[in-house]
Image (cartoon, rainbow, N blue to C red; front, top):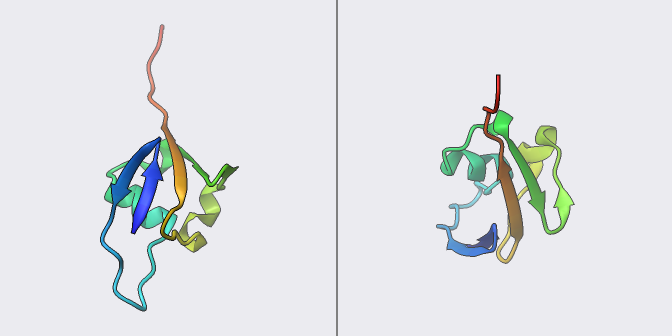
Length: 73
């Protein structure tokens, strides 16, 4: 499966049916902390509570923003 993530092309192994590749699976495979990430899929923000039901398909475009703590005290 080919995805575009933050403007870069990525090729991921297609899941073996009946398993599907969900947005939550992608976030986990990228070793990102779900509570510190926002995701836009094909120009629409996907609420975190819908990640497990949001299935990815070949050609999808994602923007993933990872929040980092810090700053001044």
